[in-house]
Length: 301
Image 1: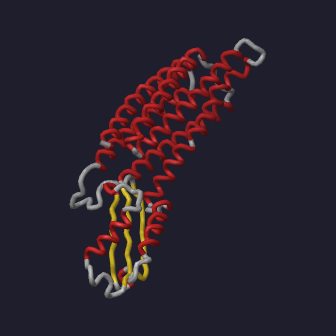
Image 2: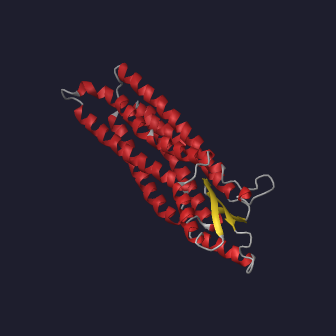
Image 3: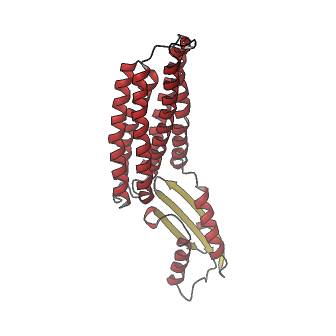
């Protein structure tokens, strides 16, 4: 059910992003606005990355096989890192274009068309933000969560563009009208600087998973659970290793015991300990690779 909701949200988001991208590119060219054109190109690349996210989402639902014995979860952070890196490069290139435009004296802009674009796109972005936020309460998808952040950022920035275009339109024919040619390039510079934290955050989170950096909350949960378990007689020490990649959680615990530990109850006691630890972990059972090993020889821990 969660996978179905995730894919539904991504499909709708892709369709809406393509509509917004088409509007941005078309009206950006007609209005002579680099900031609107950048918004359209940004949306086009975002739609392409959403298609990649949808493909990876479907891939992650597949069963493990002989070649991918740990599943396909590791493809998710790789796709997210690629997505963020492309958007970072686009923002950097657009910022350089904005600086060049300011140095060259700006450019004339059809503010009426630009205002119409900003109204339409801001409405679409806020609508998608509300829709996906409600849907992701059940889907609980990292891909959809990233998409929600993107729609909110786009909505806020487009609203800021609307205000700026309206102010510049009102300045036409006044003593300050000589500043209006600089509005578009200045907005493009501000737009790219506002967009930049989004891909940087995506890349940062994705690289943590690519490099298998232990999630602090999961590591803390394991240690809290083990504090209670280690109070049993016969348990001497433990070593734990945790990682998160995509939607998958990898948890490995090696417990050092006395040689005669559980000699009376055997395997049932060991399984009870595993169950006790598992119940205190927040990672969903269907998304975790959970191993608890017991040994009396510290060399194997």
